[in-house]
Image (tube, rainbow, N blue to C red):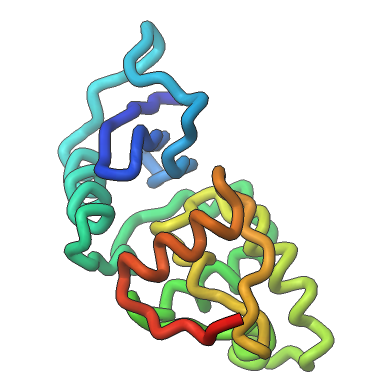
Length: 164
């Protein structure tokens, strides 16, 4: 599967794609190295997403709801959660329970929402970092750096956060 790594103000990100759409996006990880023999030159549509990510991580908020994601390997419930999460715009947050409600699910489904977001193959692009506990507390984040990365992304986007 073709992929590329690229520099951002927060570190090196990675992106993978097929003709059907993006298959994966990885936030900066101190262990990731740029370059490599298996990298491909991204097609123009992927290059445009790379530029938008660089802008976003420079503080110029971008909306990635129009990105073509390859949902083929994503279970139906997870896909619905991810698509609902795309509606949460930069500078805003939502709760796991609110996402469940959007899907017509009871509050008890909020754990399943959290599980789906924890498996998000496109963090940042599908903004799972914008989903918080009903109390406003920062809960798990599966990306590199965990909750500190989640807080950094929310601050970068200008989200108003509840103090602990």
